[in-house]
Amino acid sequence: MPVKPVTVSAQWVRAAVVAAQLIPDPAGPGEYRDAAEVLRGIGLIQLDPLTRVSTAQRLTSLTRLPRKYRAESVDAALWPAEAPVSFESFTKVACVFPLQDWPLLHLRRQKFREKYAPTLGESIRAQIIEVVGSQPRGVQIGTIETALGSARTTGWNWSEIKQAAELMVRMGDLVITSRQGVVRLFDLPERALPQQLREADQLPPDELRAGLARRAAGSLAVMTVADFAHHYHLSQTDAAHGIDLAGLVPVAVEGWRETAYCLPQLLEENYDDAGLGEVRQARLIGTFDPLLRDRGRARRIFDFDYTFEAYVPRDKRLYGHYVMAVLSGAELIGRTDLQRVGDVLQLNAVFPESGRPARSVTARTKAAASTLARQLGTAVQLPGESGQSVRVNSSQTVS
Image (cartoon, rainbow, N blue to C red; front, side):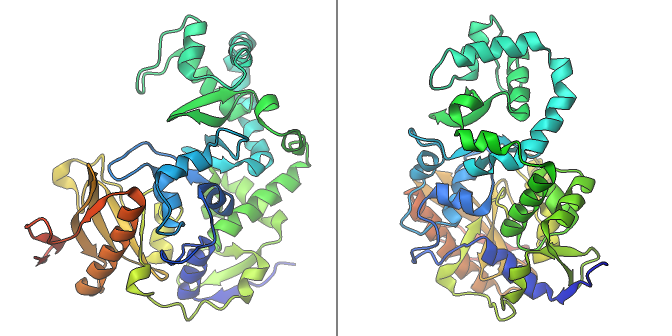
C-alpha cells in the first residue's frame, strides 16, 4: 500500500540540503579534516580543469574545509602517493568518487560493457590491458598510445586508443585511482583496488540499486526521482526502482510538483528555524559544486537561476565569465564574477539576488572571498580596492 507523503516546507528542504553538505563556519574545525574526507562525505566531486579561480575539485573541497586548509593539499589528499582513496569515472561528466563506492557503480559499468564491448573488440582491449599491466604503478594515456603505435591525443582530438581506454574505464576494465601531477594514470582493477571491493561487485543487483539510492539521499538530503537520475546519470526507470528498494520516505514539498524522497531519520531534524547566517560564515559555491551542478534542482530548491557563462559570447553574458554563488546560512543570496590574477583573487562584480539588500550581500561576498583567498594563498582585491567602481546590479554601483 502506498505511503502517504509527509508534507515539508520549502524552507525546511533548503536547510536540510545545505546541512547535508556539511559546509562549516570557516573559522571552526569543520566536519572534515581533508579533501578525502569531503569526498567520502558527499559521495562525488565533479571534475573540470578550468582554473580561472581554481579547479573544480579544489573549489568544491575548499568550501567544506576550514579557512586554514590550503588549496594545494586538495589534490594530494584525493590522489595520495600511497594507498588510493578514490577512483575517477563518469556520471554524464567526469567525477571522482570515494573508493568504497566502487561496488555501487557496478551496474552502470555492466551497462557500458553490454553496450560497447562488442563494438570495441577483444584485440584492442587485450593490447591496452597488456601495456597497462606492464607498468607497475599505472600509465599515462600517452604511453599507451606510443606503445601501440598510435597518434597522440591532442586536446579533444582523441586517438582511437584514447577512445578505447576511456570506454574501458567506463566498463571497469581499467581504473584511475592516482595521478602523476595533473595527469591521470590508467591501471588494472585487480591491482589498484582492494579485493573486498572487487568482490562486492557480486552483491545482488537490487542491493546495489538500493545502496546507490541511499548514498544519493545522504548527500542530496531531499531528492526527486529526476534529481537522483541526474546525480548519477541513471535512467528515470532505474532511479525510481532504486528509490523503491531503498526504503526512502516520500515527502511533499510545498511548491513542488513532483514527490520527493529522503532517508527516514532526516524527518526527525528541525530545520525550519535556519536563518541567513552570520556575515563571517558565508562561503562561495563553485559552478560544479553539488549545490549547483544540477541547475534545475538549484532553481527549485534555492530559487537560484544559474547559467555557466564561460562559453557564452561576452556580449551575451548576464553576469560574467566565471561566476560563483554566495551561500549564507541556507540561502543562495547572490553571485560574484571573480578571477585569480597571479597572486590576487580579484572580484569584478557582485550581484545580489532579487529582494536581497546590496549592502548585506556585498559584506557576505567580501567575507566569503577572503576565506577562499586565504585557502588559495592569495591576496584578495575586494570591491572598490582597484580604484574603479564595481557593479552591484544593473542600476547600482559601489565605489
